[in-house]
Length: 253
Image (cartoon, rainbow, N blue to C red):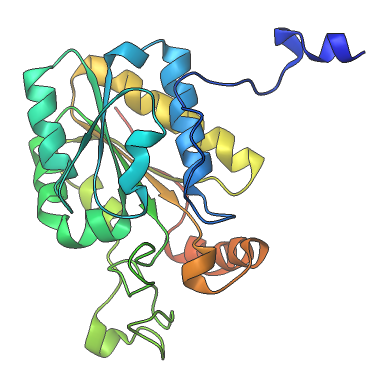
């Protein structure tokens, strides 16, 4: 019986060589590890490990270059899409992706994100949205929900004084340079499969050279939200998803 289970055709999951053996630094229950796994599996299944270049900026994913066994470049805070633009223009045959959090991409990196998408740079942008600055202490982010508490909005985000949350994915979908824009999640097996399909499409589209692919992954932050992983997933479903609905926003015509 055990011998049958070890046969490749009977294995639901198998180790991917695109992920290293290093122990990840992410907090227990965080969605980053699953998102890493899905992206690594896609790179592996497409057989493009040697042709892929990733860009890791500052934030929770600052050490992503330890975990992906592909060429990786560190970028200054918020500048990942600018760095990826340069890499893709020098090596147009490569598969280039950025992996960014909401503070990096939608705050200090807003300009780089918008202009890269508007130019239609032929890269994949992976955007992890947990509505908070995770690495630096749980401060309010551009994506923090109205009424949502953080270390810098202890009474909850007040729209009157702090503005509305930024729906960056809907914004970039309106730009002519974006080719494929979607919002997914990784908190259940079904959502994991949908996210993996979206990432695979996004990388495959690079060969068509028709513009920027943008994959948002709504995730939890148990540490920043001061919840257990189970509580944070439930809170995400009840609060994040109504404001950031899952699904394709812009698909190739």
